[in-house]
Amino acid sequence: MNLLSKSALSFVALAASTGAAQAQDGAAFYNGKTVNYIVATAPGGGYDTYGRLVAEYMQKYLPGSTFVVRNMPGAGHLIGTNAIYAAKPDGLTLGTFNTGLVYNQIVGNEGIKFDLNKFSWVGKAAADPRVFMVAAQSPIKSWADLVASKEPLNFSTAGVGSASYVETVILTRTLKLPIRMQTGYNGSDDQLAMRRGEITGTIASRSSIDQFVKNGYGRMIAQIGGIEKDVPQLKTLVKAGSGQELLDLIESQSEIARLTAAAPGVPAPQLAALRDAYRKSMEDKDLQARAEKLGLPVEPAYGEEIAKMIATALKQTPETAALLKEAMEKPKK
Image 1 (spheres, rainbow, N blue to C red):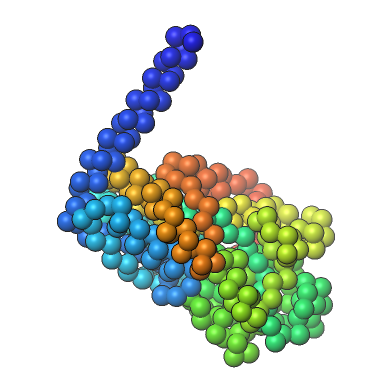
Image 2: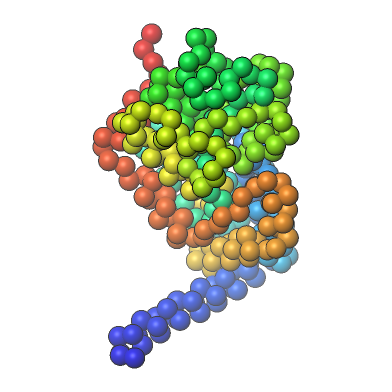
């Protein structure tokens, strides 16, 4: 082994031992402390379920800590996310929010009071493809039926700024779909509305509607991203060149699902402890078994890896950013 190789290995070993020491020191800080875990949406639904699971197990791996889950819905996850970003950077406030905020930062949404590149990233729990789902009682049986509909179809979304809202806007306008958006459906509100016949369909993460479909209340007619073979990929159903850049952007977001982050500037020992507890939580066999029972995918990534994924998602060409902005702008009357 040459001197360069020995030096590189020594550096890696030193970095690992330093990280472990910081995590141990940081874990002691949490003994006797209360940690606020903010979920930037209403109770119920995928974000809340993941958030509560993560908080429960992080508390387990930070002995002596008490995690309190606080739902802060509103403005398409902006209220809760702004609160996490503005929190004191002591590692006692963290939380989860919607990846749709990536789109909003790209186009410069004025409601954003944060920079996603500056969060103290803890990890992400899953990769979660997007799907078009329609109610079981709907006459829409396939993508072709949806496109051919002569009447506008009511599709639910969460608040303006959420991933479901942004992606529904992008896809409806870019692909010229006969969809009429109905906003303000948080948690599992949209699923109840589908069963009542008020809503025809939705564009959502697969994990959030998978059980609804398995129960026979809905059907998936197209998917964006993911490796599942039971639903046709949207790319194969639309004409070549039909907003391909935006479809690629949406697909990339499916790889960054169920994020957990703290405010910028959390001291290294506390952040190392949070990341260590998060990793141990994701690797916990009991958490994995519970997630599987709930139909929640667990495909985690951690720390700086998430920071790099976010930075890549935000670094779009001017052309793609312009297309995204155009798709998200309110239509002229």
